[in-house]
Length: 307
Length: 307
Image (tube, rainbow over all chains, first blue to last red; front, side, top):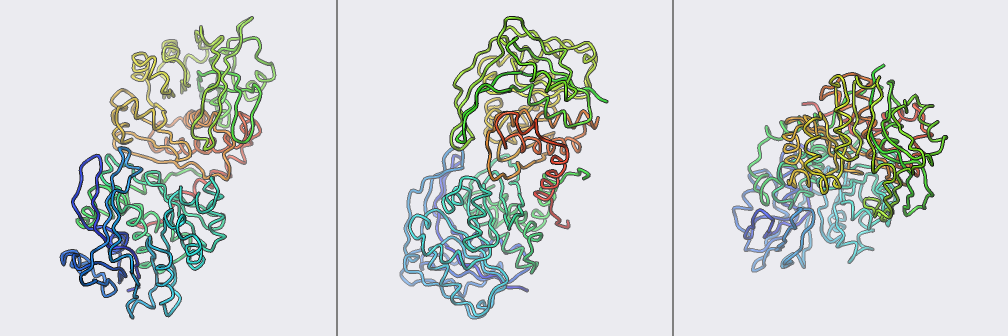
């Protein structure tokens, strides 16, 4: 089985949406990426950090899914990264209420020995210096390196972000972040400029409006599944990235054609993530549901015009 | 050849976008629908009204495209409907600067005799009483009646709008209008409620984010083509509707499967419309370009996951 190396936060989240609120629950980019990628036939490891307030049941959740947590550092006497946010009524925007970095503030990622030759590396949204440090520790060039980032790093650590962007094959950002990073309003122009920064593939996430994949002059579009109710968007982007990276890892094929499928798998998994609070839906999801919804994606977009 | 009956404004527009501004140019929903539908193999007629300030060259534009204008009333001494608007920088919103109804204020549509048995009727955005009056004049039930409307009529003539909505097969509205009409934020729920008002098919236009077609529990999604530059969105929704109705008229097939193709044709034609000011791009467009861009739509959305 191929190896997927994941770096990303493992965290506590407290979430408010128009539908309710949670206490501290499991969250973090690394968590969502890991749970999503676990739907594929692969080996994975999460590199991250938590405090010793992090419950054993959450650690068990990873190991039950064959996610290697030898690179998940547990800091004695430390506290786990905590984020709290409140979504607006449209669920498209949110206010951050609390960010406590805690153990994340001094995080030095350590890649497990047997993942230094990972086939695919998924750099979840984190300080770009942490993302670079993971790449520095690798002993062989991965087939694919995927990076997710956000506007915060464009505001606060742009030189470091540009450094790590140079080193990756695929970048995933949302539409506003693509515009900020490139200075272009048109997403077509934005993607071209971002490609010139390094990544051969640019994925632009548009939330409920789907996702675009750009590669040279090629474009592919995956819709988001129209849902009766979006309950909690937390983790949807990370779940998308985990599905994308997981499918690529399993299939060992880094062509543009195969990345189309990876984007569909990512969108498919993200469509489940938003149906319940936090990781609840992903934890309860089974593979049959995933396959069944892929059929919906197919009927949603496939048409039959003779050309 | 099958017959498409179009009712909609024929107008003067003056448009400002971040890229420039125009004097009074040809505009109106009926105009865009007619020009778009003319790319298909069909007979069409526009029912509308103008003043005698309306230039012969614009009338010629219609007749050159085999659009019957015997139902386009020219009011002696009257002035043509005039709209002026200014788009914001994102081109997704606009301010109306001037609306002069002129001859449109007293418009009584008269369906030409040989279109009273039209195969397909496209009711462009107009007062719902005018839309109803067109249906009242028909002598046989069309294969398909498509209605486009907007928030203005929901605000000012809701009972009349609900009356005509009951009588149509397909309604096209944008996402905000679907929410207003249904009182539901979720577009899936909105579409279900609107179907319960009468139309078996609900098309929700999302501008640069594409369009959704709902029918019972079936959903189809057509993306908008990602463009380097959107120059002027005026008429895009009408061009979309004209492409949709035109394709259905030509193909004589009102199944959900065929409507998928119609939605793609509509999106395809709309993607040209926005590339220049007003009707300029549609007037200069040739069929080869249309077919060539259909291939782009196919590669944009088609994927190959074995299920």
